[in-house]
Picture 1 (cartoon, rainbow over the protein chains, first blue to last red):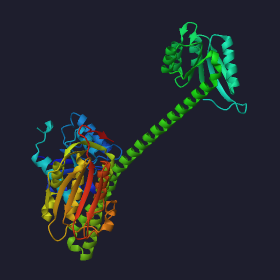
Picture 2 (spheres, rainbow over the protein chains, first blue to last red):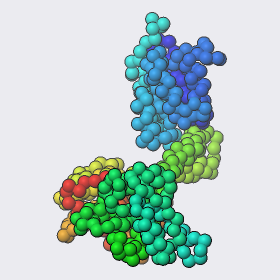
Picture 3 (cartoon, chains in turn orange, green):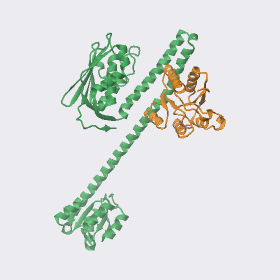
Picture 4 (tube, chains in turn orange, blue):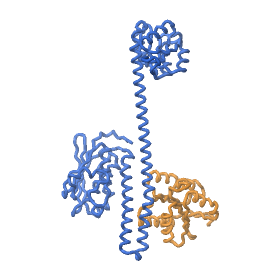
Length: 147
Length: 386
């Protein structure tokens, strides 16, 4: 990937999204992290609505499940039912360990499900390995208008 | 249902008389009044009228002649059963063969009274009304039971919801505390004095312990919530799985865990694994100066398997043999042995859910043996309870 990779963080807890952002950008200079704090904002971002009219589609989405206004599950369903968004990998990154959340997320088409680790070391290492896997080792679909 | 009438002692009775002979109608009415009932009666003289009357009102009782113009008694009986299932029917009729009488009772008639023995009507009516009252009570009791079951199911759903809230909403703020105190320590290491580092360590430690506590509480509540998925399980494999889960603790402590050939039993596999895991884990955790040595064995009586987990650890004073199975009961400080007193409570819950019993034999300093018995269930009784 030659252009700067973009990650969209959808999380209502600034403590988590700041830390995630810090870990992500700390590792790569050529990485753009966009943060939105609820499901409605995420929807607007991905559909270029309002202030997001110029926003590029992200290469990876880290999505929390329990979000204000529009639930993370609904956001996930939107993405995976939309032909132009479906190919973007979505990692559900949440506190929940509930079996029904895990099952539901995969049913809706999540590309993986990661429970936020409870301690700093594991949290940092989880975010780093997500970045490494999805943005370094995994081959992602190339956007047609980039060709 | 009958209720007390305006006349002090008289029980009011709404009765439908299915009778085409006006003289018989009068006789039956008189007999009922003589028996102490305040009678309100309707009369149906044929099948069509019977159908119409049953559609229009609630009766305490139907008194029906077996022989009606245009229909046989059995048809009338079927109609009454269909339209007014709860209402008792007594046949008041001329001579009725034994076979027909038995057939009528089979089809749901409460009784039959011969017209030339009308004096028996009182007993028959009393019994039929009493029977109906009992059935109504039974139905009400069943309804109450069904309501209770529904209430229980609702409270279980609420508990599940609570467990979900606990797993998510309580853990998130805890993670914030743990992560950011740790981040403080990492980033500002040079700027902090020894005290500050100690305080941060305490804060992180507290948050981490709280996280473990929530996890364990969830595990405890899950044992009851998910129900038992009973099937034939090889206890050897359950122990192997438990050992696999404990491999870090085993390596670190250089524990030696051995087991005899264990039986196949009917149990919930994941609960059995958890049971062995908690018991073996404790045997390793509460060890003395020697590396832990744990032996698992099983023997059977006619109807039970008795499993034993024996260790060479620090042992338990006899006066604590019961309390260790109570949730949150601990015998040591966190500094001595970390933990939150849920492991053995989970063991007890698992064993009791399987219809068994768990106890410990031990002396301080002389190791412990945890025994649990599980009933031997015949193969083929695999079932799932919730």
